Image (cartoon, rainbow, N blue to C red; front, top):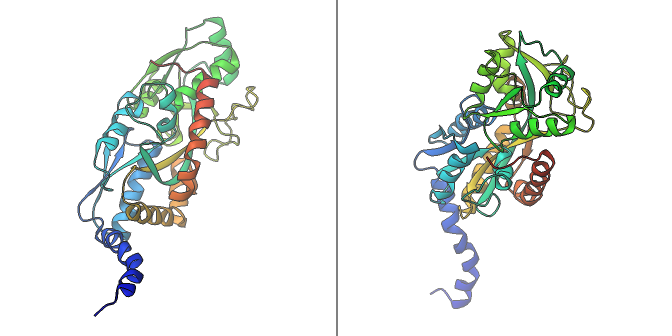
Length: 321
């Protein structure tokens, strides 16, 4: 017969069994990776890379779903309304945090989500059509000063980081431009190339195909250093806007309340995949930089990240639209 003392000694080990069994059984059905951005965006390509890697290392099926709209709020809200069981995962960029200070979000960016991992960082590019008379940032600023609100620029929506990048540039340069909001970053690039827009801000991954095709011209990059993809394009700091820098990380999130064993399992699998040389090569091909934080680090950094984007929203003076 097992004594009472032995039972008490076994309790800590027994308490871990449900979580261990849960982690071992996961995933037992397809896992949805929700991307609140269009196919081809930096966030989207990272989600697709991870879906393929996790299918190999964890088994099971990881399916990417693009749920665009309302500057990413629609897709994000879908995740927070799903069961906290690890089968609906959000891949998002800085708008996850910045939206809270621009729009009325039906969720709390920190309180309702738990970061699984931070995987990469994306800079943005300021582009015009290849045949545009605007050859430099100085050209664009001069044209905007001659005709306030006469130049148009596109972004994937109000409060998104491309719009913040444009608003920050406008405020630092003392100009006004007409903002045209889109649902898809790729459509912004297409319309800039076609002349429907005078300029646009977007991720390198979105702009690169049209730059290579000779349809877009890169005027500047938003990072502190020049891009290896566009070494001839200055940073906005170099172009005269001293101190300008705006880059955005890419994260994976679970709904808060998801079993810790599942979050740990996903975090371990994603950070291991992100640390491999193949992911670095992939990021280079997409104009991204590897930037890894596991669940513990990304989670502890979340309040500071929220505060960072609060300050950037205030600095760029982005308003609810």
